[in-house]
Structures are given as C-alpha cells and as structure tokens.
Image (cartoon, rainbow, N blue to C red):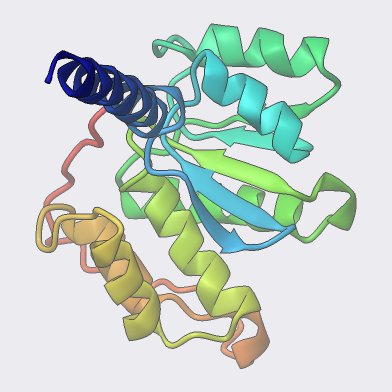
Length: 198
C-alpha cells in the first residue's frame, strides 16, 4: 500500500507541475495564442517571459503590439525584439472608428510585406484588439464573409455587444479586393466608444 500511495502522490505532483506550467503559459506567458494563418499571422495577448522565448523559437519575425507604449510588458518586449533582430511595431489602437481605420491601414501595410512574415499581433489579453485585426485579415486574405470573421472573433473572446464600434467595424468592413474603394466606413457615430481593457 505504501508503494502505491507514493506512486500516486508522485503522479499527482507531476500532473500539478505539468498543469501549472501549462496554465502559466496559456494565461501569463502567451495568453490566448492562436494561429490565424500558419507561417503568416498569429495572435495573442501580451507575451511575457517564456512567451517571448517561444516567439523567437517559433520563428516570428515581426511583433505588432496594439497596447500603449507605457503598458506593462511593452518595454520588455521592445528590448527583446531589438536584442533578437525582430521587427517591432507599437501602435496603440483606440476604440473609435477613426483610430481603428488608421490602425487597420498600418496593419495591412505590414502584412502585405512578405519579408515581415511570420507576424504576431497582440493586445493585452488577445481577445479584442488583436481580434479586430484578425477579423480584417480573414476578410482581406482568406475572403471570409464579415459575419464569419465576426463570429470567430466572438468565439475567441470578444464579448458580443460589449464593444459596439469595433463590432460594427467588422460587420461593415469592405475588403480592398471588393472594388468598393473604401475600406469599411459605415460606422454609426451614435455608437458609444468603449475603451479597450489594457
């Protein structure tokens, strides 16, 4: 009985250690990491510690940080990028229609440049701001419908109805290939601006 108890206790310790490491990685080091398109675009929350090491190991060439420059983790990430030869872009995305449009333009210019691939775009939690840009990517490059892109954004963490301007932006976004000329602008000025969680 003692031997069996010891084996079970050791197994429990291993499970806790592995589970704890996994929890740390998905919640702290690289939260909500996901592949948008293999070898081209990935999304996540703010990478920290082991998450930054993983970014390098995974071969990411470009980091797009959608948080404010003074946000927790941003200076560490900028230093990491410089020390490891990665491109680093930090453009804080506001939650107004105009802010989103400007950020989408900058984002697409980077994604259009194949020398930047693979790219990791992230915000704080990997749900909202990175979700909006992932949705734009899906519409532009994967030719998804606006509804498909929006539904994926909901599945990956954007709370439906919580961010009306970004949601409306995705619903009404017009891909450059659509021949519409303008890249999305049907947003209602009556929608309330809700700040992103940083």
